[in-house]
Length: 511
Image 1 (cartoon, helix red, strand yellow):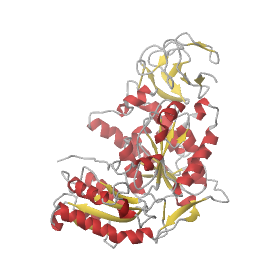
Image 2 (cartoon, helix red, strand yellow; image 1 turned 180 degrees about the horizontal axis):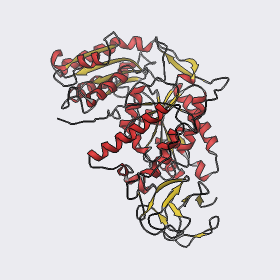
Image 3 (cartoon, one colour; image 1 turned 90 degrees about the vertical axis):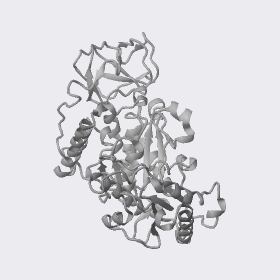
């Protein structure tokens, strides 16, 4: 195969499919390589003068910070965001690419768990939440009593229960009792307390924290019932009594949780969160667009897909506004972009701080380049709605949720909003799982698959190296989504990931 990949006729760069040595001839581009260029990195196809924009995907990914010769490596040493930090004009062209969804005539089904209220789960857990960091140890002790590896007898009589998990956090106090920070935390906890993949939930507090459980219940219109119980350490009489009380309450919930069966239901009940982490130069070529194909298929079957990570769509948001179902939807997305610009400014940061060291080692240079690849996860369907962090997702189809780019925080918001599954692409090898929603991992390149296949569910490197089409791989992802939704375990579930990856977004002052 050609050692390079050209993504668009108007691009100023091509992507190395393999390591390129200085002096190598690139016949398809009539180029001679200048210097060593790692796989996944960019090669200039023409001489680029300092200050000129550089295009990949036929979109601006940055501006030359020095003169670049044809055949040279284009990366951090000669490409940046520009004098204005990447704030070049983007044509938002609201709605010009929005098109009505063409739904399939015979929707596919999966084996889901239908709850009493008609919602459909992909998993069947009992959960233990905390209102504050101070009750985290007690919550974990309750859950550990039901761990299948260390205490197999505890759940032996309940084969239909996927497990008992403790989702603890480092917040809940040292913050204002009103305002954006606590509102967001309560919204997140409420989303998990109501999550369809939990049959029952305990919420454990300390007693004197800012995030009082009683105030959370009032603000989020929650009330106790046999499958939603709350209590705190100070009123119960200490840690040991709290742990014992929690164990007894879980034991009472187990028979009800076990009384479920999987039945065939339309995949329109699925809500899929889209994530990418440890991205590389291949992410926007293989795994992300292939996932986008699967997303289009899901939407055509009536399901919902949530794109997120606002710092990782920065510079590519105009590709989403063009697909907005209305001006209101587009303007809400633009408003969130402006919120992030202000958020970075007041914290003396910048949007281009987002690409990590691993991203750059994998070939990504600027946040503009990373974002253009990340947006590909969202497919091509119309953008139906934009949500703030952890808001309940009620719209069907392709939607957006404002979250940070940090994967655990972002996915926590999606699950709080109702995501019953996560699809997570990675080029460097992110280790991640998510309770109570299973997470499918997709590798962007064959080298990662060969090195870390025990963590990866599906390899998209075949698009880069084996000639498989994006559409073929997207169809494979679609089929795997149905299998996992029906109960097939993902690699991250088999490794026990999920409880430590619950990370609510903390905004505002820590007092």
